[in-house]
Image (cartoon, rainbow, N blue to C red; front, side):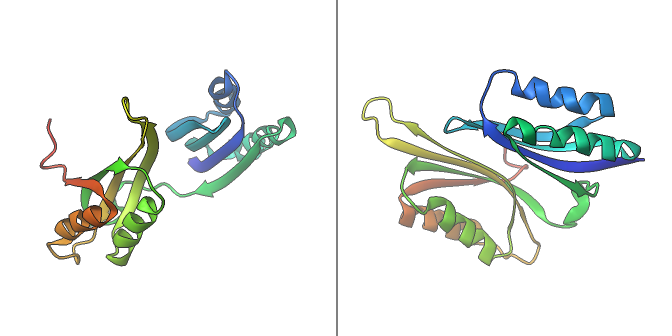
Length: 179
C-alpha cells in the first residue's frame, strides 16, 4: 500500500537543491506526484506531494528531518489520496489577471471567490517590469472549481471587480480554451 505526504521545504537557495531532496526520496520508493518550486527573494521554496510505500514512512521521515540540521525549514504532513472527484458536479475554470501592480489585488480576487464558495485549486502570481517604463506589472493565474449552486453571472461580476482594481481579468473554461 502506498502513502502520501505533503513536503514543504524553505531555506537558502543553492544549486542542486532539487536533486538533493529527490535523492533523499528515491531510496524510500518516493515518487513526486505534484510539485511547485521557486526561488523567492533569495530563498528556495519547495512544495511536493510525494507517494511512497507505507512501510517506508518512518525511515523517510527521519531522512527528511536531517534537512533541518542543514538549516532548512521542513514540514511533512501525511495526507490521503485524492483523485479529481473531490467536488462532484463542480466546474473547472481558469482565471487570469493582468495589470499594474498594487496592494490588494490577490486579496480582493480571493475574497470575491470565497464569498461565492468558489474553491481555488491552484494559484500562481508574479510581478515583472514593463520593458519601456519599468512599471511593475502584476500577473496571476488561478485554476478554480465552481460549485453548481453558483449561478450565471459570476464571471461578469468578476470582470467588474477587475475594472475597480484597474486590472484585466479573463475567465476561461476547459470548453473554451484553445486546443
